[in-house]
Image (cartoon, rainbow, N blue to C red):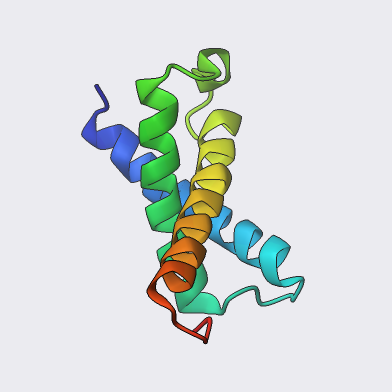
Length: 98
């Protein structure tokens, strides 16, 4: 099970992960915008970090205080959040991507 320290790490690293994911998805320097990048990254870090912990993915990367595993989990979690958001918009019949 994850600890409070894991949660804080995922949130901090999520700020980086959300910006990276936003830039990769939009191909713009600003990504989705500052606040959207921050929200996406925090949520993505929690989702990705929880999944990496649950399935014990890449445990050898966990040796650094803010590890490469945490950054990778945040970016992948952010992509999962974006995919879920896209699926929700598509399933609910919304036409915009706002």
